[in-house]
Image 1: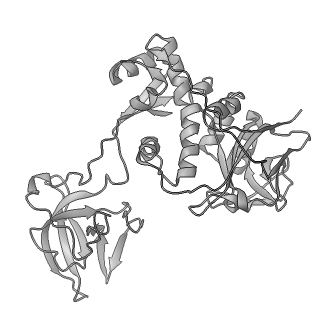
Image 2 (image 1 turned 90 degrees about the vertical axis):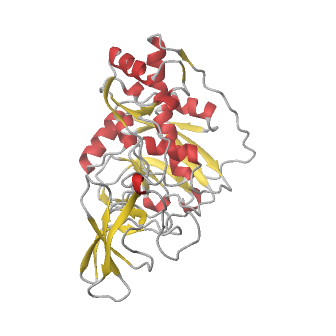
Image 3 (image 1 turned 90 degrees about the horizontal axis):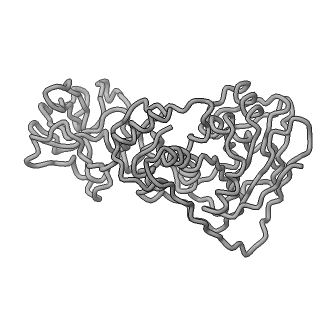
Length: 387
């Protein structure tokens, strides 16, 4: 479980510093495995110096550049097509594995006209600094900064805590804050209750079938229409990055945020992709389902599936399906907050070889009342229960 000090203080009023909090966590049995430096997707972009720029042996308009990232680093060889690439130039280097902000392309070691290129030298346009795509960036009077990150990121250190199987309540930041408050390290903050008035009837019918080995006991849902899905705001991106995850979209990121904040897994469906209704049922042996991880799963019998009239939309409490996944053009969503039996989750995930953050929490047993808690603090969720 990963937390940051500022995130913890959303739930705990305390003046304790990072060191004191780490010591107290250890005292109460929540072992701190490590404290990690903040990283983000722009941390890879380094200030570099071109030591040599020669004509590419197999291309007239390309140059083969040797790049220095400081005295303790190996020289990097990069093929570059910029006309201003020259010996002595200080610029920005993107190594293999980095993602270019404008194109979203992840760099690999590639052969260009028979010569291996390790990364690239960047223009302002490629880094979304400006629209200038004529040549690579030229940095003046920055020789002393060679090898340093070009982008400044003021992220926090993150605390990685080892949570034992008997403490599923501490798989959310709020649960850890509760323990610290009980240990006298501060005052536990009350959740602010927000009521959202829903002026229309939910158009998607929800049914939990009454059958043996039903893995779902309660299914809370909320239909939200006319949304504008886009990139998350910076505060949310920083939270997601601090967890070691990559921001995807506002809809996906906020569900991940609530899961790590309150230990309450959520799932968002593109409501317009649901065929008429939601039925929570046992799977039939031989049914197939393509998940959000891109894999196609062949299901056995008695696995808890969330389905519509066409077929399975997801494995309850484990992973959603690609057919109903949200995208940037999604306009209406159905938000799920359900409770699944730990034994059902564990058996299905083990048989199919699936491991997700939601599965990790449900198989250990989350608080069933968290469906109510999320309705108070985030959304009103009409809940269908099996009796």
